[in-house]
Image 1 (cartoon, rainbow, N blue to C red):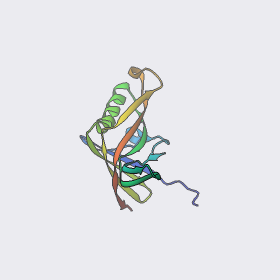
Image 2 (image 1 turned 45 degrees about the horizontal axis):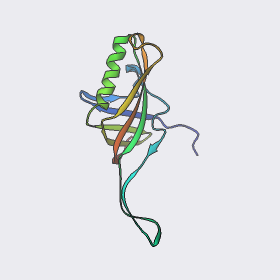
Image 3 (image 1 turned 180 degrees about the vertical axis):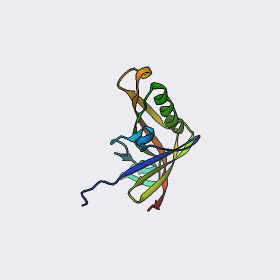
Image 4 (image 1 turned 120 degrees about the vertical axis):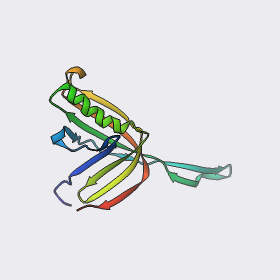
Amino acid sequence: MPSHLLSIEAEIETPIGWLALDDEDNGYELHRESFNSQAVQARKVEAEGDWVEGTYTVRAVRDNVSENVAVYIWADTPFELAERIEAFISGLEQLQFRFRVTHGNLREEWTCMWSEYKVETEQAMQFATLALVRATIPRLPAKTRELVP
């Protein structure tokens, strides 16, 4: 097993274009909790009978997958922080948007839906210059996958 960690990059499609969530020069950094778990559920029809033990799955299809993403956002001023937070959450609040994640040489792109999120700061928001935004992003189970150099 390799002893090094792969770099992870993420981008969200916002109303004004793609926003890199691992761009430290612009005040965004993925939190280590991002992509730490993934739940896959199914919509299914099951059959059971009075004379047969258990239940049997008749039909099943994958349901949406929930991705956990946490992003540190910082700035020099509270105004600039509010602008950067708004840029990120404007992407999360779309009815449908795309999200890209790159792990080493693998890039995946997902179709996502309106996401729930929480903004956390160490102090009152009007004085903060650092925030952590935690989002649960529902996405379609299908994804595109490509090799990147």
